[in-house]
Each structure stands twice: as C-alpha cells, then as structure tokens.
Length: 440
Image (cartoon, rainbow, N blue to C red; front, top):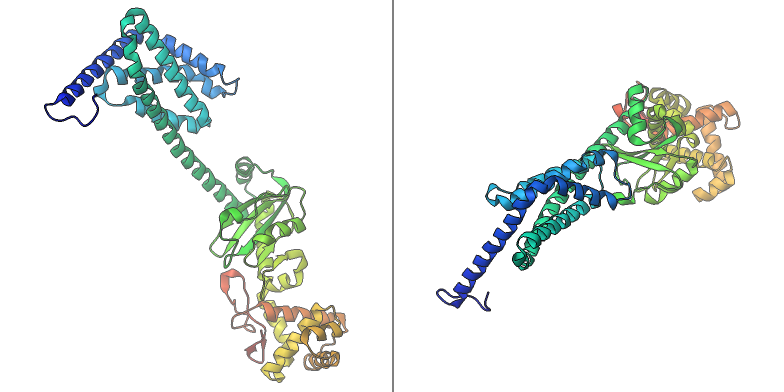
C-alpha cells in the first residue's frame, strides 16, 4: 500500500487492489498446503500430543492423557476446516469454547491448556512451511506474509478457550460454595446425626467427623469489619467457615490444637458487635448443639462496648436465658419486695447489688465504681435484704438473688408472671416483674 489515504481513481486505489490480489494469492498458497496436509492429520496429531506430553514432566492427569490424541486431532481438524472452507463459519472457535469448558470441568490448569494451543500453532506452521518448501519452494516468501494472520488465529482460538474456561470455573466455584454453605447450614441446624450428611460433609468440607470444633455467633447489627476479606481468616491452625444469617453471622471453626482463648483472640480485632462462643465439641454431629450454646452465649451480652462471651464463663446467665418462664418467676419471687420502693431507688438498689457481685462481694471496690462511700453500699445491701427477705451471707439466698438479677437484666418484653414468651422464636423470655412493672 502507498502512503497517505488512497483517493478514488488514483494510484492509491490501484495499490489497494494490488494488495488485495496478493492477499488472495497468499491465501491460496496456504489453502493448497493445508489441503496437502489433510491426509497427514493423524501424524500431526501424534506429533502434537508428543510435544505436549514431553514438556509436562508427567504432571498431566490420566483423564487428560486418555483423550489427548483425539483432542489434538479434532483441534487441528477444525483449524484446517477454517482455512479450507472459510465460508462455513468458525467451527474452530466453537471447538475452542467446548474444550475450555471441558478442561475446566476436568480441573486442568489453564496454563496447560494455553500451552497446548501455542504448541498446536507451532506444529501446524512447521508442517505448512515444510510442505510448501518441498512442493512449491518459490512460494515460501508468501508464507511470511501469512504468518501474522496464522498466529492471530491461534490467539483467537486460545482466547475463546480461556474465556469459556474462566466462565465455567466461576460457575463451578459458585456451585461448590453453595454446596459448602448448604452442608454447613445443615450441620449448624442440628442435622449432623444423618450419616449421609456426615459422609458428605467430611468429603466436601475436608473435615474429619471426629475433631475439635466450636461455633462463633456474632450479632448482625454492626457485624464484622466492613470488608469480607477482613473476617477472621484461617490462623493458628484454626479454620473458619462463615455463614451469614438473617439475624447473625455464624462461623463453624475447626480448632485443630488451638484453645478457645486463641479463638477469642482471633475474632476480637474484627468484631463490631457482641459475639458468643460455644464450648468445644468433639464431632461434626454436635455442631447443632454448639450453635445453640453459642447463641445463648451471645444473648448474655448486654450493655455498651463489644463483648465476646464464652458460654462456659457465663453459665448462670445462660441458664436464666434458657428458661425464660422460670426466670420471670424467679425475678418476681426473689425481688418482688423491691416493689415497695420508688422506681428510681429500686434501680439504684439493683445497680448496687450488681456492682457488688461483680466486685466479688467487696463493698469498698463497689463504692469506688459507684462513686459513693463504702457505708452507703453496705446500707443499700442491708435494705435489699430487708425488702427481699434474703440474706446475702447465706449461699442459697445469694444464688437466688444473683440469678434473679440476671433475669431482670437479660429478659425483656411484657407478661413475666403469666409466663409469656417475650420475643417468641428468638428464645428471649419475659422480664422479671416487680409490683406489676418490669425492672431493667
């Protein structure tokens, strides 16, 4: 082609026609060589298969070896067809897409597939040059002009195969993730006694039926750090499988040799809401119970800040939460005498009792927290004893008062003494009522 834009009727147009004529002649030379090679297609497939295997060091799976020759022959054959019968469409690209999907299903690495295409281009081109050089040596220069077109075609084919591979791989990963999620949900919902589910879980999750497991449940409000990749990741020998539910985020945790303190330490930097941690269970089949215990531990959290509650360290509160009707009755019976005092003073008494309990029965430490005198704390405690008819130095009475205090602090909703269900299905029970009004 001449320089500049060709004008109508000028030398530029003549130059374009000359280029077109030469392109058609070059393609004819290539088609003639490919037609001569058609009978040698099985031999070329042999050569290509050998080239592919020789550079892989035995890494190719048996399933990929068994059909390699057929794949080589089919791929070369579609390439021949695209050159000999261009008007019939691009069967070579359709074949490349099918092969990309197939290799993704078979788990072949994509770089192996793309390497096969590069080798196919080399085997094909060497055969074409050899044929033309032997039969029409004067036409060898014409092949140079066709080389770029040929390698562009190889790029199109490998690109089509790669795109189909990626689409299929994404679909497979998504399907695999959905299966993992379904299995984890079933285990957390208590279906681990199903032997078939256990067998599937061990295979799909790669976890042993017997091992050291725990469950973490975190409130959905606030949740984890904003980015999913900032969730607690596998660390310290622990493996996390997270599930997002309507009201919480839940993790099945394979502990390995880690302890629950290690688990809490791994979760804490990422927590944006209260969390509950179950005790250790010894099998996948026990994860349903572990999830329930983690939920109980989470429900013991109240107040400001972010708490990560281990169930075994909050058993009294968990006991109160698990029996809402009895908790409501206990609050009414043990603390009912506080109805005789003003609501505001009743709150002061309950806060003083709670602080005194948290300070291990030390009036002096409780006074420091409450910004009052030690004698003030002691006077309030004596007033509680008078109103409730309980003695704080008597173990049985103290247990009742502490559990009743938990019931008051943890339960919400109307209808305690009647044994109402409070918040219903979420397991939250009724409040402890004092004199017909809920104490919080």
